[in-house]
Length: 361
Image (cartoon, rainbow, N blue to C red; front, side, top):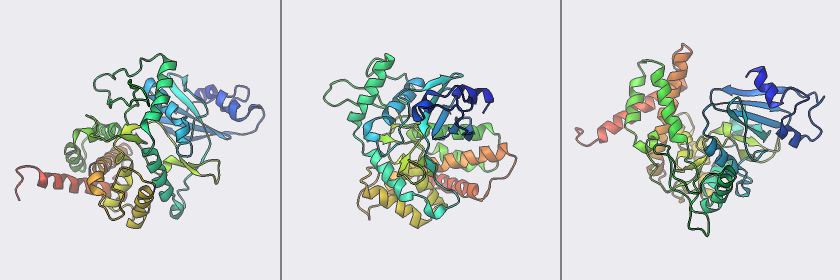
């Protein structure tokens, strides 16, 4: 992250505190003696902490309309206790990119895997999926009105739109954005292709091509829809207030309507590939079911895989494709965990071939 960006955020310059920093610290940052820490610096976003405030510079090319709606939803009272709320109602702009500010929360400790909050993750994502969409559409309506957007306007063709969600007691509709998980999977495959030929890319490509169009981000999910996180993993949970407050979900960049099974797909894929112990998977799934999450049948002995199969295959391909892209960029061979996901793609591709019409028995 460049010095100019940090200075513009007001996270280093003591005499120009960011408005969100002033909201959290009315006395301002003059002489506070607190340094700034870059928590992440990737193409999809840069995250900086200053004291009890975290600022995020979102990816270049972020859709401003969808991002505005996602922030409005995150600030909705129905999300209290589920999603960490932003410190400001709307994003600011910095060098053409949206900037948001959030309260600091203590992340999951990667050095203590036994304490990983799998049950809390399952409960939170179930609560997110169970939220009433009609009530959330009020936040969309307010966001659209403030921005002068016509209520219920159709999204452009190919924008990954999903059906409008009608607000309670109204005959008109207001659009919630589509969950961006399938689009991220498609970008991962594109990165793998751009990295050049690799001997292990073949099965990943075949597994990708055998997914239905909606799982590749090329069509609408079949429904029923729920509000989805879109990129669930343990890095998306923090304790707030730090260090021992309740766990909350963070990151609204992929939030939107979609198949709720997608949010269970990453741990399901890890379990199927042998990366996640069965006991851990069952803890996560059991917590989700106990909180009445709608993505899988509620009965403890019911088979979840008819609902999870396609999303889990898509996340397997996404993970393997990213692994190949990154290992190629770093000039190294895929590591052991990478190979497990690549081998899972081989099984997916072979199984799809065996089940295809006309395949020999």
